[in-house]
Image (tube, rainbow over all chains, first blue to last red):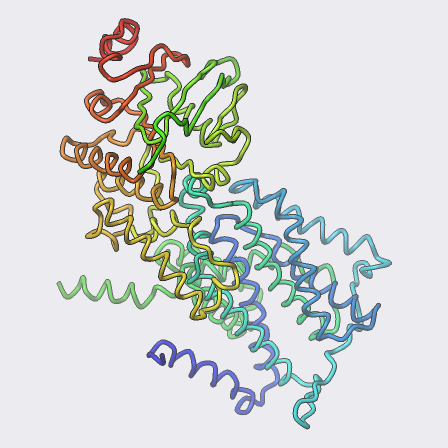
Amino acid sequence: MLNIKNGIILVFVIAGFLLPISIKDRFLLHILINIFIWSILTLGIRLVLLAGPLNLAQASFMGMGAYTSGLLAMRLGWSFWLCMPAAGLVTALLAVGIGYPTLRIKGSYFVMVTFGLTEVFRHLWMMWSSLFGGPQGLLGIPRPAPIHLAGLTIAFNSKVPFFYLALILFLITVFVMHRIDLSRMGLTLRAIPQADLLAECVGVNIMGYKVAAFAIGSFFAGIAGSFWAHYFTYCSPWDFTFVASFYMLMYAVMGGMGTVLGPIIGCFIMLGLDELLRPFKEYMPIILGVILIGILLYLPGGIISVPERVRMLWNRRQS
Amino acid sequence: MKTDKNKKILELAGLTKVFGGLVAVQGLDLEVKTGEIMGLIGPNGAGKTTVFNLTSGVLMPTEGKVLFNGEDITHLKPDRIAQKGLVRTFQANTLFPEFTVMENVLLGCHLQADIGFFEDLFPLASSRKKRDRVDEKAMDIINFAGMHDYRRETAKNLAHGYQRLLGVAIALAAKPRLLMLDEPVSGMNAEEKTTMMELIFRVREQGISVLVVEHDMRVVMGLCDRIAVLNFGRKIAQGTPSEIQNNKDVIEAYLGVDE
């Protein structure tokens, strides 16, 4: 049962849970929380991309989750622990409603539709100010209620409980996405862009699979959005533009699309680099752009394929 | 196999398809009897592939009906038609090129995998048993198609002949009652053609009816129980191979020019 691979994963998970004990730097914890949430979003984009469609509205779905969760908490006084799953479900249902008519559209046209969607959502949030609070968004979203566990009270008034919550959400997402990869659903999704007509002619309901992937990816975006809203205690239309979705796509491609691990590595390295190079903040898009081009040219499998590439080059030199 | 020889598995009635101003298929009546190998031939552009697309739901006919086992399937989508047991192959080497042979056939088994979404996601003992059963079925089909040695090969790296065999194997995995083959031996050498013909005969022995479009006359004559000939979207003749070979219209329209 416990092979090397599982062992390494276990070490990482335990290390993740122990991190806040050794790290006292609140800012570092915040960066890690950020990376976990971006990883969830990026994995959602990747799942849909497996079947072909590129969803540039992932950030908007995150936004929908944030607004849903924030409004349920502020207007109806729901507990965060109800708001979060509700945000996920509302976002997933929205994805089903939007996916059915739009996922029929192929290739770059679908990308344009999702790009348009982000603007539709943003204007909805801006214009319907009585509900969504207009350009300044929702202010004063309550923090999650304290949890009472075996005599222990966990209050969400510092980075540490948020870190653990983000870590757990991240691990759940990774687990589900990895299981999908190994499942028949994963096989079917990956088959669709290779030969969709053939898949259809052996009985695959292509629209059903695409919509399901879209709904699952959006569900996790909604969860991430809910976390976001209650972590920062505000959200605004400017947090969820297509630029954010584009970064998610970039992290997925840089890390490598083949496995669940790729996009995670992409998020860790790229967001980590983003922080390390903070002194050169204004040059960051240029640096990222150059790295992206380099990876697309020389590492089509993403950062995750580096060991394999090195081995290949090494073997070539040996022979 | 206790198949009623006179029962029709597929019936096309007055099938017509118009593309803009071009009549690709006009008033086609055709039937495939249970357990037979039926051939559909005709010069290039005669409308054979269009007939396949209309029957398998890839295209909708302008007029006419498609009956499968007496049931009207004219307006069903390809995946629903496949579920009913009518499965087709494609003219080109249409495969899942990045998948291994095994994964290709596993995808063909899609309909037979009676696994629910959550069952699929979480590795419980019961779902693992179901997966093993599907794997076994896929293995059986790979063996049946004579591709056991290539089961771990990536599909795009296979030789042409094996890619065509794999195309048939994927279709067989969907458990057809009628298998429609679109030019199964095109581009093959003599040896590969013989292998494919043998496979098609063995498919029929399994009680699966076959409708085949093919250009290779030797293969068509050797394979089919009955043959229908299309020219300019109309059926100009129908009968046994020897009847077709001696039919004047056919010789004029097709064999006379081609051979």
